Structures are given as structure tokens and as C-alpha cells.
Length: 289
Image 1 (tube, helix red, strand yellow):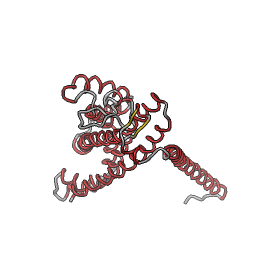
Image 2 (cartoon, rainbow, N blue to C red; image 1 turned 90 degrees about the vertical axis):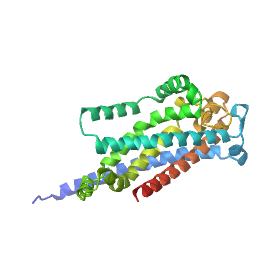
Image 3 (cartoon, rainbow, N blue to C red; image 1 turned 30 degrees about the vertical axis):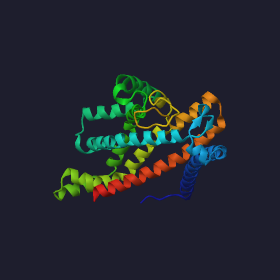
Image 4 (spheres, rainbow, N blue to C red; image 1 turned 135 degrees about the vertical axis):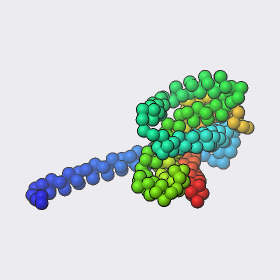
């Protein structure tokens, strides 16, 4: 039996208190920075926001009017990207984690996924411009929402694949083995046991991907076109709220309109994230029924 001296116990308690204090300060600092950014942007931008600002089209290079086409363009782009990338990313992670045997090829695939995630967004934009806008322009419409969406899919697939795979790996193996021992198939086990338990991690991966896409500017500046007009279809050019914010601030110098756009962007990010989480829970619930 190990005996602890009083001095040792005091030192352990002090170390525990110090670690707890530092971790609490780190968490509080993170939340404080987030709240400070949100509060500052909202405080600067709320004075600009009105129904006209939300529902009118921009005039004079975005220095007047509203941002409705940018809101529509953002929703179109994010929706199309998630519609394409989420099934592919989650399906790939299921295959890598549940079906593909361990080996060199699996390690190479994982390394390639991590390498793709580390590529700067401007490189993705150049690839999207040369491939989707130029080479496949007859099919994508050139500078269009579709070209931007396909570029965004390439950007966020590594995020969804790696995060979803980690979520699937966190499911206890004894639960899967117990399901298989009852005579069920591997796919039935994945559908009924693995996916419901991995849902929080998969939802997190999609939300992270949405955050990456909705705040991107460089890649979409080269692929979506940056048009101020309302997009009638995915084959038309458009601009996202982040791209509109950047162009208005840098090309016209109207900081107040840029802050108004930023405030709307923050609210839209929250709405899209909550909607995506609710949708994924509903889909998995129905899928597992």
C-alpha cells in the first residue's frame, strides 16, 4: 500500500488546482474572444441592417442597396456543396473504417486525404478555375455557382472524411462484434449500431465543413464570378456574403456596408449550422428506423 506524505498531498492538490485554473482560463479566453468578435461586428453592422438591406439588390458596386442576391448565392452554394460532399465524404469514411483492410494502400489514402486538407484555398481556386471554369465550362456554365460548388466539394471532402472516420472509430468495437455475433450483416450493423452512435461526430464534421465554405473568398472569387445580379440557376454567376464583404470593403472602401454584411453572415452561419444539425439527426433517425 502506498503511503502519501502530507507534503506530497499538498503538492498534488496545488498542481491539480493550477491545471484546472489554467484550463478554465484557456476556455474562458476562447469564449471571450468569440463573443468579442461577434459583439463588435454586430454592434457595427446592426445600424445598417433593415428590410431594404436584406431584400433589395445592391447598387453602385454594393455601396448602396441591399445584399439579397449575395444571401441567395450563399444559400445556393452551401446547399449544393453539402448535398454533394456529405454523402461522398461520409460514405468514404464508412468504407475506410468498416470495409477496407489495414495496409499500405489504406495508409496512402489517409495520407493523401490529410495532404489535400492542407492545400491552401487559393490553390483549390486555381484548380477550380482551370478545370471547372475553363475545361468543363460548357457543362458547368463557366463562372457559376456549380463551378464554385464543385471547387468547394474538393476543399471540404478531406474535412468530412477525416472527422467522420474518427467519429466511426470511436464506436466501441464490442458493440459491433455483439451485433455481428447475432447473425446480422455488416451493413445492418453499420446502419443500426455504428451510424447512430457516430452521429454527433459526423454532424460536427459537416458543421466544420460549412464553416470552411461559408467564410471562403479566394477560391470562389476565381470560380463563382462575383456577379452582383440575382442567380436564376446554378449555371449563373453569383457572389457569397463573404465574397461580397471582401469586395465591398476592398474595392469601394464602404466599411459600414461591409460590417452590415458581416453581421448578416454571422446570423446566417448560425442558422445554417443549426439547420444542418437538425437535418442530419432526422436523416439518421429515419435511416436507422
